[in-house]
Image 1 (tube, one colour):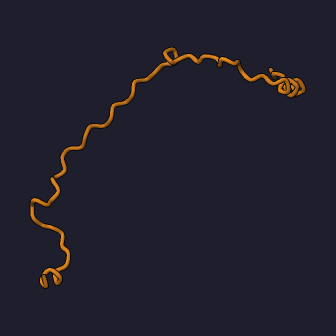
Image 2 (cartoon, one colour):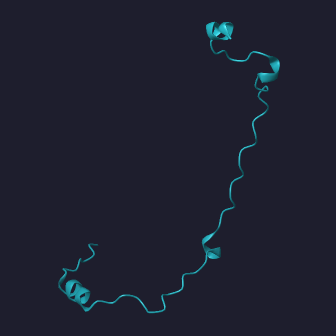
Image 3 (cartoon, helix red, strand yellow):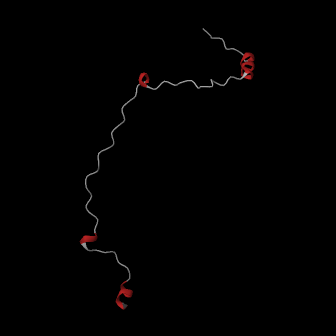
Length: 70
């Protein structure tokens, strides 16, 4: 027991304690297939309808309109 105290802690050096050699890296993950807009799921309007506030109509009624410059 006296000898163990003097030596302290040590890392095991026996071959059975060593980490195995690094093998080849795994392949890169595959890319997901591209989904085109024609295949996308169409949105269904909400059951209760869209929010419609009469106050918004007042705001846009008085907003200045922009004219296209040719």
